[in-house]
Picture 1: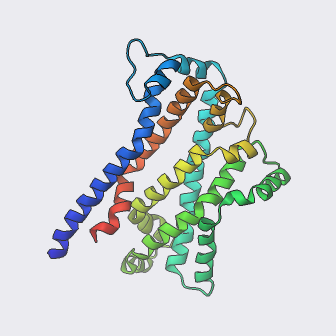
Picture 2 (picture 1 turned 120 degrees about the vertical axis):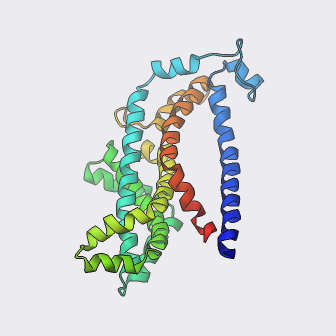
Picture 3 (picture 1 turned 135 degrees about the horizontal axis):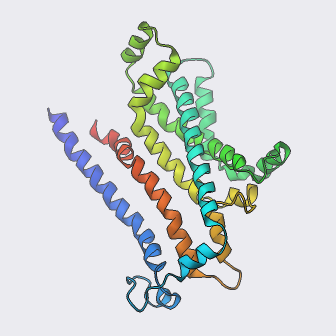
Length: 279
């Protein structure tokens, strides 16, 4: 009873802290969105004020729609992000299940090898990755970005999911084996539903770096047909002149899909983050 009583205040405190951090994190986003509806002069004169009758201006959005092909950029970013998240969750969960469920000689070394992917930035291998994509004929394709982002996200997915996989009851899995379920059915029908909060956490942490990345789209897929939203926004950034109205409008539009995906995973994300606080 005492543990149950103390877990409730801890969970409430964890939720309160998460809400505070969310407000702090969303404040810069709010500033970007508000200034995207203001004239250039108003952006620099009063960046923290709301747009009024004299400062309201949609020139940024009209410029974005007139220049470039932003619907295509959005579609490219959405395809790359969704497919990469799916592959990261699928292969990351499979690898985490194998490391948590089966004992073999290379178990520890395999887990350490995958953990190195978190500590070593993938951008250090940019030259080798570019050569590999050129040799494979995948330059200027969305497939190249999907492969790179999948490889980038799997180490973190394995690191997080393996700990949650270890908490799944062995009795439940053994009961499934007694009933004649294969290892694949045990994984997909028994284990995955129990680790959905952890998978939502991995999805959010994987989604944001992919959607906001500029490095690999600039190197691997810079053509007009494969540009992402972040790369497309660079059209309005010049060496001598920057169209700030268009830049803020493009960034505001780029935020919307991320918010939608975040809202989809938010409930499971909160459960995954606060699961340790309610034990």
